[in-house]
Length: 427
Image 1 (cartoon, helix red, strand yellow):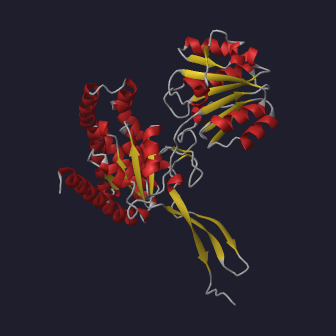
Image 2 (tube, helix red, strand yellow; image 1 turned 60 degrees about the vertical axis):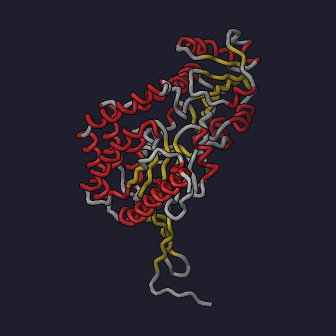
Image 3 (cartoon, rainbow, N blue to C red; image 1 turned 90 degrees about the vertical axis):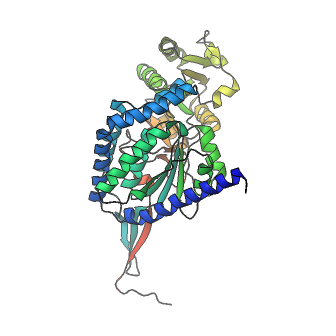
Protein backbone atom coordinates (compact mmCIF):
# COMPACT_ATOMS: atom_id res chain seq x y z
CA UNK A 1 0.00 0.00 0.00
CA UNK A 2 1.43 3.40 -0.95
CA UNK A 3 1.84 6.34 1.39
CA UNK A 4 -1.28 8.19 0.16
CA UNK A 5 -3.42 5.09 0.63
CA UNK A 6 -2.09 4.72 4.19
CA UNK A 7 -2.96 8.33 4.96
CA UNK A 8 -6.43 7.92 3.45
CA UNK A 9 -7.05 4.79 5.49
CA UNK A 10 -5.86 6.54 8.65
CA UNK A 11 -8.18 9.51 8.10
CA UNK A 12 -11.13 7.22 7.40
CA UNK A 13 -10.50 5.29 10.61
CA UNK A 14 -10.11 8.52 12.59
CA UNK A 15 -13.33 10.05 11.23
CA UNK A 16 -15.38 6.91 11.75
CA UNK A 17 -14.16 6.74 15.34
CA UNK A 18 -15.35 10.33 15.88
CA UNK A 19 -18.67 9.45 14.27
CA UNK A 20 -19.22 6.37 16.45
CA UNK A 21 -18.47 8.30 19.62
CA UNK A 22 -20.73 11.19 18.57
CA UNK A 23 -23.58 8.77 17.78
CA UNK A 24 -23.27 7.11 21.19
CA UNK A 25 -23.14 10.47 22.98
CA UNK A 26 -26.16 11.75 21.04
CA UNK A 27 -28.38 9.29 22.92
CA UNK A 28 -27.32 10.85 26.22
CA UNK A 29 -27.64 14.45 25.04
CA UNK A 30 -31.07 13.80 23.51
CA UNK A 31 -32.38 12.71 26.91
CA UNK A 32 -30.63 15.36 29.00
CA UNK A 33 -32.96 17.80 30.73
CA UNK A 34 -32.86 21.51 30.01
CA UNK A 35 -31.25 22.45 33.33
CA UNK A 36 -28.33 20.10 32.73
CA UNK A 37 -27.74 21.44 29.22
CA UNK A 38 -27.89 25.01 30.51
CA UNK A 39 -25.37 24.19 33.24
CA UNK A 40 -23.04 22.91 30.55
CA UNK A 41 -23.49 26.05 28.44
CA UNK A 42 -22.75 28.34 31.38
CA UNK A 43 -19.77 26.19 32.37
CA UNK A 44 -18.38 26.44 28.83
CA UNK A 45 -18.80 30.22 28.97
CA UNK A 46 -16.90 30.32 32.27
CA UNK A 47 -14.14 28.12 30.85
CA UNK A 48 -13.72 30.46 27.87
CA UNK A 49 -13.38 33.47 30.15
CA UNK A 50 -10.95 31.65 32.45
CA UNK A 51 -8.85 30.59 29.45
CA UNK A 52 -8.59 33.99 27.76
CA UNK A 53 -4.79 34.13 27.89
CA UNK A 54 -4.48 30.61 26.46
CA UNK A 55 -7.00 31.34 23.71
CA UNK A 56 -5.22 34.54 22.70
CA UNK A 57 -1.84 32.77 22.70
CA UNK A 58 -3.12 29.90 20.54
CA UNK A 59 -4.84 32.36 18.24
CA UNK A 60 -1.57 34.24 17.81
CA UNK A 61 -0.05 31.08 16.32
CA UNK A 62 -2.83 31.04 13.72
CA UNK A 63 -2.54 34.79 13.07
CA UNK A 64 1.24 34.52 12.57
CA UNK A 65 0.78 31.58 10.19
CA UNK A 66 -1.95 33.45 8.33
CA UNK A 67 0.21 36.53 7.85
CA UNK A 68 3.11 34.37 6.69
CA UNK A 69 0.86 32.72 4.09
CA UNK A 70 -0.48 36.11 2.94
CA UNK A 71 -4.01 35.55 4.18
CA UNK A 72 -6.18 38.53 3.17
CA UNK A 73 -6.98 41.28 5.67
CA UNK A 74 -10.70 40.39 5.85
CA UNK A 75 -9.82 36.76 6.61
CA UNK A 76 -7.27 37.80 9.21
CA UNK A 77 -9.92 39.98 10.83
CA UNK A 78 -12.34 37.04 10.98
CA UNK A 79 -9.59 34.83 12.38
CA UNK A 80 -8.46 37.11 15.20
CA UNK A 81 -9.53 36.41 18.79
CA UNK A 82 -9.35 39.39 21.13
CA UNK A 83 -10.44 39.50 24.78
CA UNK A 84 -13.56 41.38 23.65
CA UNK A 85 -14.42 38.68 21.10
CA UNK A 86 -13.86 35.94 23.67
CA UNK A 87 -16.17 37.76 26.06
CA UNK A 88 -18.72 38.04 23.26
CA UNK A 89 -18.49 34.27 22.68
CA UNK A 90 -19.13 33.65 26.37
CA UNK A 91 -22.07 36.07 26.38
CA UNK A 92 -23.54 34.26 23.40
CA UNK A 93 -23.41 30.94 25.22
CA UNK A 94 -25.12 32.46 28.25
CA UNK A 95 -27.85 33.89 26.01
CA UNK A 96 -28.43 30.50 24.41
CA UNK A 97 -28.77 29.01 27.91
CA UNK A 98 -31.57 31.53 28.60
CA UNK A 99 -33.61 30.39 25.60
CA UNK A 100 -36.69 28.33 26.44
CA UNK A 101 -36.37 24.56 26.31
CA UNK A 102 -38.18 23.13 23.30
CA UNK A 103 -37.16 19.46 23.36
CA UNK A 104 -40.13 17.34 24.41
CA UNK A 105 -42.57 20.16 23.69
CA UNK A 106 -46.01 18.92 22.51
CA UNK A 107 -48.04 20.75 19.88
CA UNK A 108 -51.21 20.32 17.81
CA UNK A 109 -52.67 17.72 20.16
CA UNK A 110 -56.16 16.90 18.85
CA UNK A 111 -58.72 14.17 19.44
CA UNK A 112 -59.68 12.16 16.38
CA UNK A 113 -63.00 10.34 15.76
CA UNK A 114 -61.23 7.09 16.71
CA UNK A 115 -60.75 8.42 20.23
CA UNK A 116 -57.00 8.78 19.76
CA UNK A 117 -55.27 11.98 20.76
CA UNK A 118 -52.65 12.78 18.09
CA UNK A 119 -50.06 15.54 17.99
CA UNK A 120 -46.37 16.25 17.60
CA UNK A 121 -43.35 16.31 19.88
CA UNK A 122 -40.20 18.33 19.19
CA UNK A 123 -37.07 16.15 19.27
CA UNK A 124 -33.35 16.43 18.39
CA UNK A 125 -32.10 15.57 14.91
CA UNK A 126 -29.24 13.41 16.23
CA UNK A 127 -25.69 14.12 15.06
CA UNK A 128 -24.94 17.27 13.09
CA UNK A 129 -21.74 17.80 11.11
CA UNK A 130 -20.65 21.42 10.71
CA UNK A 131 -17.93 22.55 8.31
CA UNK A 132 -16.77 26.14 8.45
CA UNK A 133 -13.94 28.54 7.64
CA UNK A 134 -11.92 31.25 9.36
CA UNK A 135 -14.03 32.34 12.31
CA UNK A 136 -13.05 30.38 15.45
CA UNK A 137 -16.09 31.73 17.32
CA UNK A 138 -18.20 29.38 15.18
CA UNK A 139 -16.73 26.48 17.18
CA UNK A 140 -18.39 27.75 20.35
CA UNK A 141 -21.59 28.99 18.68
CA UNK A 142 -22.21 25.78 16.74
CA UNK A 143 -21.49 23.51 19.68
CA UNK A 144 -23.78 25.56 21.93
CA UNK A 145 -26.72 25.60 19.53
CA UNK A 146 -26.45 21.88 18.86
CA UNK A 147 -26.21 21.14 22.58
CA UNK A 148 -29.24 23.29 23.40
CA UNK A 149 -31.19 21.42 20.71
CA UNK A 150 -30.17 18.06 22.20
CA UNK A 151 -27.81 17.07 19.39
CA UNK A 152 -24.26 15.77 19.29
CA UNK A 153 -22.02 17.48 16.76
CA UNK A 154 -18.87 16.91 14.75
CA UNK A 155 -17.05 20.18 14.00
CA UNK A 156 -14.53 20.71 11.23
CA UNK A 157 -13.08 24.22 11.22
CA UNK A 158 -10.72 25.76 8.71
CA UNK A 159 -7.06 24.77 8.83
CA UNK A 160 -6.11 28.44 9.26
CA UNK A 161 -7.75 28.42 12.73
CA UNK A 162 -6.68 24.98 13.92
CA UNK A 163 -4.87 26.09 17.11
CA UNK A 164 -7.65 28.49 18.12
CA UNK A 165 -10.35 25.89 17.50
CA UNK A 166 -8.60 23.15 19.48
CA UNK A 167 -8.25 25.55 22.42
CA UNK A 168 -11.96 26.45 22.25
CA UNK A 169 -12.91 22.77 21.95
CA UNK A 170 -10.93 22.09 25.14
CA UNK A 171 -13.09 24.68 26.96
CA UNK A 172 -16.24 23.05 25.55
CA UNK A 173 -15.19 19.66 26.87
CA UNK A 174 -14.42 21.17 30.28
CA UNK A 175 -17.94 22.61 30.40
CA UNK A 176 -19.56 19.32 29.39
CA UNK A 177 -17.56 17.48 32.06
CA UNK A 178 -18.64 20.03 34.68
CA UNK A 179 -22.28 19.29 33.86
CA UNK A 180 -21.62 15.53 33.82
CA UNK A 181 -22.43 15.27 30.14
CA UNK A 182 -20.26 13.23 27.75
CA UNK A 183 -17.43 15.20 26.17
CA UNK A 184 -17.94 13.01 23.09
CA UNK A 185 -21.11 15.02 22.38
CA UNK A 186 -18.88 17.66 20.74
CA UNK A 187 -16.23 16.16 18.49
CA UNK A 188 -13.67 18.48 16.94
CA UNK A 189 -11.77 17.22 13.89
CA UNK A 190 -8.14 17.92 14.74
CA UNK A 191 -6.64 16.85 11.42
CA UNK A 192 -6.31 19.48 8.70
CA UNK A 193 -6.28 16.80 6.00
CA UNK A 194 -8.99 17.67 3.46
CA UNK A 195 -9.86 13.99 3.15
CA UNK A 196 -11.53 14.35 6.55
CA UNK A 197 -14.17 16.66 5.06
CA UNK A 198 -15.10 14.20 2.32
CA UNK A 199 -15.30 11.41 4.87
CA UNK A 200 -17.47 13.48 7.21
CA UNK A 201 -20.10 14.32 4.59
CA UNK A 202 -20.40 10.69 3.49
CA UNK A 203 -20.74 9.00 6.92
CA UNK A 204 -24.41 8.11 6.62
CA UNK A 205 -24.29 5.77 9.62
CA UNK A 206 -23.14 8.53 11.95
CA UNK A 207 -24.10 11.95 10.57
CA UNK A 208 -27.75 12.97 10.15
CA UNK A 209 -27.26 16.35 8.50
CA UNK A 210 -24.33 18.56 7.43
CA UNK A 211 -24.25 22.34 7.61
CA UNK A 212 -21.48 24.06 5.61
CA UNK A 213 -20.72 27.62 6.66
CA UNK A 214 -18.39 29.54 4.41
CA UNK A 215 -17.89 30.84 0.89
CA UNK A 216 -19.79 29.75 -2.19
CA UNK A 217 -16.99 27.42 -3.29
CA UNK A 218 -16.99 25.51 0.00
CA UNK A 219 -20.78 25.19 0.11
CA UNK A 220 -20.96 24.05 -3.51
CA UNK A 221 -18.31 21.37 -2.97
CA UNK A 222 -20.09 20.05 0.10
CA UNK A 223 -23.45 20.02 -1.69
CA UNK A 224 -22.01 18.18 -4.69
CA UNK A 225 -20.18 15.47 -2.73
CA UNK A 226 -22.38 14.88 0.34
CA UNK A 227 -24.27 11.64 0.86
CA UNK A 228 -26.12 13.03 3.88
CA UNK A 229 -28.67 15.88 3.81
CA UNK A 230 -27.22 19.40 3.63
CA UNK A 231 -28.66 22.65 5.06
CA UNK A 232 -27.07 25.48 3.11
CA UNK A 233 -27.10 28.74 1.26
CA UNK A 234 -24.78 29.42 -1.64
CA UNK A 235 -25.08 33.20 -1.90
CA UNK A 236 -26.63 36.23 -0.27
CA UNK A 237 -27.60 38.24 -3.33
CA UNK A 238 -29.93 40.66 -1.53
CA UNK A 239 -32.12 43.38 -3.03
CA UNK A 240 -33.88 46.51 -1.83
CA UNK A 241 -36.68 47.85 -4.02
CA UNK A 242 -37.57 51.52 -3.54
CA UNK A 243 -41.23 51.69 -4.57
CA UNK A 244 -42.88 54.73 -6.16
CA UNK A 245 -44.80 55.13 -2.88
CA UNK A 246 -41.67 55.13 -0.69
CA UNK A 247 -40.97 57.85 1.85
CA UNK A 248 -37.79 59.49 0.50
CA UNK A 249 -35.76 59.89 3.70
CA UNK A 250 -36.65 56.39 4.86
CA UNK A 251 -35.68 54.89 1.52
CA UNK A 252 -32.28 56.59 1.60
CA UNK A 253 -31.48 55.49 5.14
CA UNK A 254 -32.65 51.89 4.70
CA UNK A 255 -30.78 51.40 1.43
CA UNK A 256 -27.61 53.02 2.83
CA UNK A 257 -27.70 50.92 6.00
CA UNK A 258 -28.41 47.74 4.03
CA UNK A 259 -25.25 48.28 2.01
CA UNK A 260 -22.81 49.82 4.47
CA UNK A 261 -23.62 48.20 7.84
CA UNK A 262 -21.08 45.48 7.02
CA UNK A 263 -19.98 44.64 3.50
CA UNK A 264 -18.94 41.05 4.16
CA UNK A 265 -22.17 39.64 5.61
CA UNK A 266 -24.60 37.56 3.56
CA UNK A 267 -27.41 40.02 4.37
CA UNK A 268 -25.64 42.97 2.77
CA UNK A 269 -27.47 44.75 -0.07
CA UNK A 270 -25.93 43.97 -3.46
CA UNK A 271 -28.51 45.31 -5.97
CA UNK A 272 -30.74 48.33 -5.48
CA UNK A 273 -33.91 48.52 -7.57
CA UNK A 274 -35.69 51.86 -7.91
CA UNK A 275 -39.06 52.74 -9.43
CA UNK A 276 -38.66 55.12 -12.37
CA UNK A 277 -41.35 57.32 -10.78
CA UNK A 278 -39.14 58.15 -7.80
CA UNK A 279 -35.59 57.68 -9.15
CA UNK A 280 -34.82 61.37 -9.67
CA UNK A 281 -36.04 62.18 -6.14
CA UNK A 282 -34.17 59.51 -4.20
CA UNK A 283 -31.03 58.58 -6.14
CA UNK A 284 -28.94 61.80 -6.09
CA UNK A 285 -28.89 62.11 -2.28
CA UNK A 286 -28.35 58.36 -1.80
CA UNK A 287 -25.56 58.33 -4.39
CA UNK A 288 -23.80 61.14 -2.53
CA UNK A 289 -23.95 59.25 0.79
CA UNK A 290 -22.68 56.08 -0.83
CA UNK A 291 -19.77 57.70 -2.66
CA UNK A 292 -18.83 59.66 0.48
CA UNK A 293 -18.60 56.27 2.21
CA UNK A 294 -16.38 54.90 -0.56
CA UNK A 295 -18.98 52.69 -2.22
CA UNK A 296 -18.65 52.21 -5.98
CA UNK A 297 -22.03 52.48 -7.72
CA UNK A 298 -22.60 50.60 -10.98
CA UNK A 299 -25.72 51.79 -12.77
CA UNK A 300 -27.93 50.72 -15.67
CA UNK A 301 -28.42 53.07 -18.64
CA UNK A 302 -31.73 54.41 -17.26
CA UNK A 303 -30.17 55.09 -13.85
CA UNK A 304 -27.24 56.91 -15.48
CA UNK A 305 -29.68 59.54 -16.76
CA UNK A 306 -29.98 60.53 -13.09
CA UNK A 307 -26.45 59.53 -12.02
CA UNK A 308 -24.23 60.29 -15.03
CA UNK A 309 -20.97 59.86 -13.09
CA UNK A 310 -21.79 56.33 -11.89
CA UNK A 311 -19.92 53.40 -13.44
CA UNK A 312 -21.64 51.29 -16.08
CA UNK A 313 -23.34 48.13 -14.82
CA UNK A 314 -22.96 44.98 -16.90
CA UNK A 315 -25.18 41.91 -17.12
CA UNK A 316 -22.78 40.12 -14.74
CA UNK A 317 -23.36 42.73 -12.03
CA UNK A 318 -26.99 41.71 -11.52
CA UNK A 319 -25.87 38.22 -10.50
CA UNK A 320 -22.85 39.17 -8.39
CA UNK A 321 -22.58 38.95 -4.60
CA UNK A 322 -19.86 41.56 -4.08
CA UNK A 323 -19.27 41.28 -0.30
CA UNK A 324 -17.45 44.57 -0.87
CA UNK A 325 -18.17 48.34 -1.14
CA UNK A 326 -19.78 47.94 -4.57
CA UNK A 327 -23.49 48.36 -5.37
CA UNK A 328 -25.37 47.78 -8.60
CA UNK A 329 -28.41 50.00 -9.22
CA UNK A 330 -31.24 49.40 -11.66
CA UNK A 331 -34.23 51.61 -12.46
CA UNK A 332 -37.38 49.57 -13.15
CA UNK A 333 -40.82 50.40 -14.47
CA UNK A 334 -42.88 49.20 -11.52
CA UNK A 335 -43.28 46.73 -8.67
CA UNK A 336 -43.81 43.76 -10.97
CA UNK A 337 -40.63 44.55 -12.89
CA UNK A 338 -38.71 44.67 -9.59
CA UNK A 339 -40.09 41.30 -8.52
CA UNK A 340 -39.29 39.84 -11.94
CA UNK A 341 -35.68 41.03 -11.56
CA UNK A 342 -35.45 39.42 -8.10
CA UNK A 343 -36.93 36.17 -9.40
CA UNK A 344 -34.35 36.05 -12.20
CA UNK A 345 -31.20 37.12 -10.38
CA UNK A 346 -31.84 36.67 -6.65
CA UNK A 347 -30.45 33.87 -4.48
CA UNK A 348 -33.51 33.48 -2.27
CA UNK A 349 -31.79 34.99 0.77
CA UNK A 350 -33.25 38.39 1.77
CA UNK A 351 -35.15 41.05 -0.17
CA UNK A 352 -36.85 44.23 1.03
CA UNK A 353 -39.39 46.75 -0.28
CA UNK A 354 -39.55 50.36 0.84
CA UNK A 355 -43.12 51.59 0.43
CA UNK A 356 -46.04 53.31 2.14
CA UNK A 357 -48.50 51.40 -0.05
CA UNK A 358 -49.99 48.50 1.93
CA UNK A 359 -51.16 46.63 -1.17
CA UNK A 360 -47.68 46.83 -2.72
CA UNK A 361 -46.13 45.61 0.55
CA UNK A 362 -48.50 42.65 0.72
CA UNK A 363 -47.92 41.74 -2.93
CA UNK A 364 -44.14 41.87 -2.43
CA UNK A 365 -44.29 39.71 0.70
CA UNK A 366 -46.48 37.14 -1.00
CA UNK A 367 -44.76 36.96 -4.39
CA UNK A 368 -41.04 37.28 -3.60
CA UNK A 369 -39.72 33.77 -2.93
CA UNK A 370 -36.90 34.36 -0.44
CA UNK A 371 -36.11 33.02 3.01
CA UNK A 372 -36.63 36.53 4.45
CA UNK A 373 -38.90 39.14 2.87
CA UNK A 374 -38.90 42.57 4.49
CA UNK A 375 -40.96 45.75 4.38
CA UNK A 376 -39.33 49.09 5.25
CA UNK A 377 -36.39 47.36 6.93
CA UNK A 378 -32.69 46.96 6.13
CA UNK A 379 -31.59 43.60 4.74
CA UNK A 380 -28.71 43.43 7.24
CA UNK A 381 -31.29 42.46 9.90
CA UNK A 382 -31.28 38.93 8.39
CA UNK A 383 -29.59 37.42 11.43
CA UNK A 384 -30.58 34.83 14.01
CA UNK A 385 -29.86 37.09 16.97
CA UNK A 386 -31.95 39.91 15.49
CA UNK A 387 -34.79 37.45 14.87
CA UNK A 388 -34.84 36.50 18.54
CA UNK A 389 -33.24 33.09 18.03
CA UNK A 390 -30.37 33.86 20.42
CA UNK A 391 -27.82 32.94 17.76
CA UNK A 392 -27.70 31.17 14.43
CA UNK A 393 -25.67 28.41 12.86
CA UNK A 394 -26.21 29.88 9.40
CA UNK A 395 -28.96 31.05 7.06
CA UNK A 396 -30.68 28.46 4.91
CA UNK A 397 -32.04 29.27 1.48
CA UNK A 398 -33.24 25.69 1.08
CA UNK A 399 -36.94 24.92 1.40
CA UNK A 400 -36.41 21.76 3.42
CA UNK A 401 -35.95 21.20 6.33
CA UNK A 402 -35.52 24.77 7.60
CA UNK A 403 -35.47 28.15 5.86
CA UNK A 404 -33.90 31.45 6.95
CA UNK A 405 -31.71 31.88 10.05
CA UNK A 406 -31.10 28.47 11.63
CA UNK A 407 -31.36 28.68 15.40
CA UNK A 408 -32.10 26.06 18.05
CA UNK A 409 -35.52 25.11 16.67
CA UNK A 410 -34.03 24.69 13.19
CA UNK A 411 -31.72 22.04 14.65
CA UNK A 412 -34.66 19.95 15.81
CA UNK A 413 -37.39 17.93 14.12
CA UNK A 414 -40.77 16.58 15.15
CA UNK A 415 -42.31 13.17 15.60
CA UNK A 416 -45.95 12.19 15.94
CA UNK A 417 -47.23 11.07 19.32
CA UNK A 418 -50.44 9.05 19.52
CA UNK A 419 -52.27 8.55 22.83
CA UNK A 420 -55.07 6.07 23.28
CA UNK A 421 -56.88 4.16 26.00
CA UNK A 422 -56.48 0.63 24.76
CA UNK A 423 -57.82 1.89 21.45
CA UNK A 424 -57.99 -0.66 18.65
CA UNK A 425 -58.86 -0.29 14.96
CA UNK A 426 -61.82 -2.10 13.50
CA UNK A 427 -62.10 -3.62 10.06
